[in-house]
Length: 336
Ligand code: ADE
Ligand code: ZN
View 1 (spheres, rainbow, N blue to C red):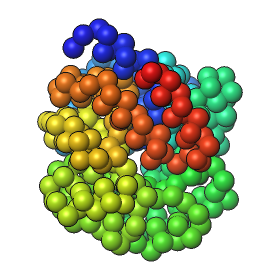
View 2: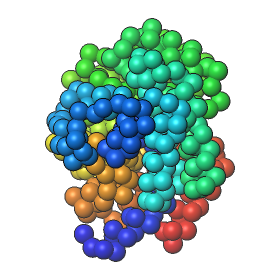
View 3: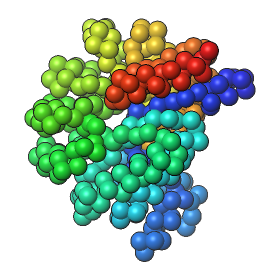
């Protein structure tokens, strides 16, 4: 790839729509928070910690991901975590980001919902003021926990409803289909939340799960959803509904040893509203630029196709129409 294309990608105005804030916890910050909270980590240094990041599928990644969260205790920890991501995103010209958080991964350790969301929220406010990066929050339910626990979490979130734009579903997909949470998502819609769900790559029942997202849950968006291409009626329905897909190439390469870059190109060609995102950049090393660059390189995408990925991201985002327009204008200006 030539330097001109790299620079084009780096400077392009971007939106990120699939980023787990807990997955942006870099080893350096983990050590800092552990020290502040008087916790002893089982690693001598960052290098040793990274060496222990051994995963080759979704469950083995999730084990490391949840273990890493033990250092997140206070409001200040959640603030620092979020601020570190925002600074990194800003440095890559991400202008807007929709950020996932996993409240049950914290409330199950005795950390209150309020502690988590207040810390993140303050960083969102400061990030917008100091860095000029706009963000909105998406609360995810852990699908390997019960539907009752998800409902309880939804109730805990209601006092903070104005701070959360949507709800999602993540964690281990095996034997945890979307319909397990049908009543929870129905209630979430009644409360005014947008909805999305992970349909992780190459899962046991990927196609059924994507179909349930469309027919039973009526999602506004799908996270990953790479396997929608495997079924003609499914991708045609996704195109017809104009549903967005938030794909994460470097993450895919860690969990299924394939960036799925070809699938991203095919989706673009079929008029699907596909986007590129970083997922858990501290574990699947690479933020927005690195993810975009790897896909461009593998599939030799044109500048116009790179712009299309970002146009999709702003279009399928949960910004209001005026805000979308503002960012799309900036993108058009960049492309002219
Ligand atoms: N939680 C954090 N990252 C995830 C992913 N890629 N898939 C499912 N759950 C997750
Ligand atoms: Zn994800």
